[in-house]
Length: 251
Image 1 (cartoon, rainbow, N blue to C red):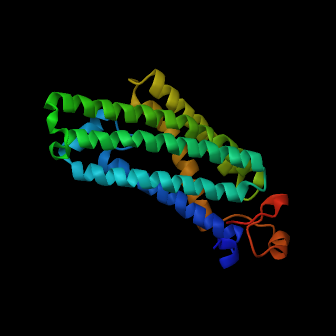
Image 2: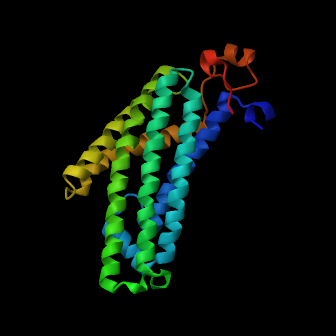
């Protein structure tokens, strides 16, 4: 059964669902970082968390996996909202987001292996402690490499997204501009992480502020205010979320 034939789904309703998913993704990501330094933490911080608070790290890993799913669902909601503006560009940002999520989830399997390598009860007792510690560190380094790589796609998806937000008039144009700046900040962070890994972390503060304003602002705007709807279009097509000339509806 589809949403379209079970209940009317208006653009404003879909916008609020998308905003709630995006905000839930942000909250889950913050919790994952707080519990186990998963995300923005260094490999050493994660190693310390596994050693001193393995239960907390496991819970953080659960939140990290769920945050990836929520991010993908939020991207899908934005795709449905913005595909009437330009279907190809909307598909492009959805594909870029999907690739980034896939890389991030694959890299988090390294965190699972790090937990196994650090747990004497999980079958790693056949290895000497020194080797188990080395394997755990290798798994954490692999995760960090995958996480950094995913930022290429998480930065790139913001450019078509921001452009479509500006063009659509469904949302304020300043949100589109912030998303474009967020994309630049993500790519700067990527280059800094790859080329200058030992640089002062303070170099990331301006980009972090822009990212916070862009993504939290977008999530809250969608959740609280929804999107602008052409009243004539809404009156003539009240039964579904329209999709341009195809007349598609939310499935």
